[in-house]
Structure formats: structure tokens, C-alpha cells
View 1 (cartoon, one colour):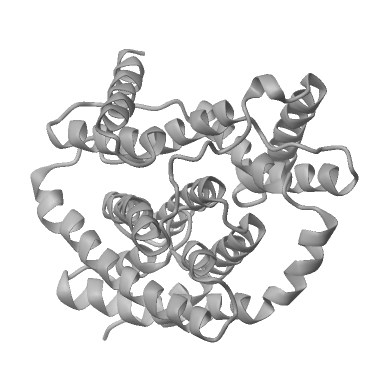
View 2 (tube, helix red, strand yellow):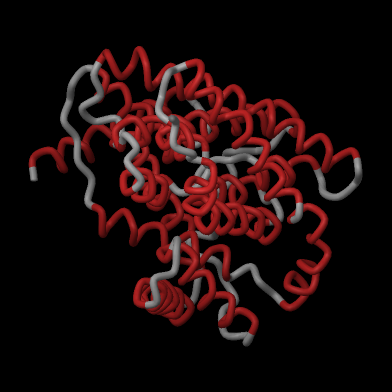
Length: 341
């Protein structure tokens, strides 16, 4: 219990420091940086997994509540950019696997699952089952999410003057109590129902589906209040930062540096695809960046909500990315992992 309370305290200090310094996204980036700094000096931290997952349901409901009939009809026009997601994943794989193998000397399995831009938990499970190094995979994927989430706010501000101080929703006091209860119901039923059927990303996609159904039926008229989304940011940020608990200097010198180098590759590839989407008129630049950035689904959803981007467009591309990676990763890992004679 003490590590949990200590972790909450560290994350809270991060929020306060970011607020005091006027830095962007204090509820998300504050806990990430505070927990990372603490891990690097040897502090043992621990989160509460059920609470962390529960907080992600807030984002699922927030996205689902935006699905009106007009938004749903507009999604049929997304197919040109959606088709680019598998292409981008293939390019990432063709560059990333040789990078980890030849530059850093990782075995094929570890290199492959470190490269695939899927969910951290999924890549850890698949990679460990296939014989990869779970600690290395954890550090590299946590670094990927960290760098993408930290870099994007500054890119959004620099290129589009995005206002990251916008509240992510209306205050709870302005939302009818029945609507708040309906959101809670969507979150719980969607989450547990998705878990029961083994859906990937159950804590976000389950609530998203149920909330979207309620919105399309004319029952749900509001997104979750700002206070709930701030809480979700806090727990998501803390979860990312805690992944570095127990990191050693040996791992910093190898895995963390390898992960940072790979993030540089990912950022360049993302900008190339975003430029292609933007110059061909397929999507506005900000939406394209948020949709193609290979960060965490939850973190990118938070950013889309705060800057007022087309959330349906952003989430559709991230759902497809995760879907393609999760279904394809084990298949292609077996296909390309030829034994060396």
C-alpha cells in the first residue's frame, strides 16, 4: 500500500509543478515526468491496475458520445486514409526490425515486438510468449508512448497554435444527473461486456461502443465532465511513468537509448505520412497528425478532445492500427522468424 500512496503523491507533485510552471497538459504530462524522474533515482512505485483501467473507460464514453448520425455518415469517406494505416505499419516494421537487430543486437523476436506500434500490454504478452525479452519490450514501448505524447503538444502548439488549456469538457455541475448516471452505465456495461468477450482494448472500446449506441439512439447528449477527463489523464500519465520503476543504468544505456532512437524514426515516418495526407487534401493537418501518430490510443484521444479535433476521425485510425497490429503481429513474427542454420 505504501508504494501506491507514494506513487499518487509523486504524480500529484508532477501536476502541481506543471501547473505552477504553466506547462501544457499538467494532468497528463506532470505525472509522466514526475514518475519517470523518481524511477531514475530508484524510487519503487506501483499503480492500481483496476482503477487505471476504470479511468480509461472515461475516454471510451467521451469518444462514443460524439458519434451522431452525421459523424457516422462521414466515416465512410475515411477509407483512403484508413488504407494508409497498414502501409505505415509495414514501413515501420521494415525499418524498425533491422534497426533493433543490427544496431542494438537484439534477437529477432524482441526486435519485432519492440517495433510493432500496438498496445504495450499486447506486445508484451505476444513478445514474451514468443521468447522475447519482456523488460526490454516494456521499456521501449513505454518510451514510445512517452516521447510521442510529450512531443505532440509542442508540435500542435507550434504548427496550429492549438489551445491546450481548453477544458476537455463541461463542468460536472452543468450536466443533468441522469446523463451522468447514463455515462456511468455506458462505462461499466461496455467495459465488462467487452472483457467478457475478450475484446482488445476493452476498457476503451467497450464503453465507446455502448456510448455511441446511446448517442445514436438520442439518449446520450453530453460528453463526460471535465473533472472526469482530468482524472483519466492523471491515471494514464501515472501508468506510463510507473512503467520505468526499477530501471537500471544498464537499461538506460541500452534499452532507453535504443527506444529514443526508434522514436526519432517514428516521428520522421509519421511526419512523412501526415504531409502526404495533408497535401493530397485527404484530411486537415492536425487531425492527420493525431490520427497517424503511433502513441497510446488513450493519450491521443485525450489530446484530440482537448484541442477540439475530429475525435471520430482520430479514434477510427487508432482502432484500425491496434487491430492490424494485434491480429498481424503473431502471424508475421512466425512467418519471418526463419531459423538460422
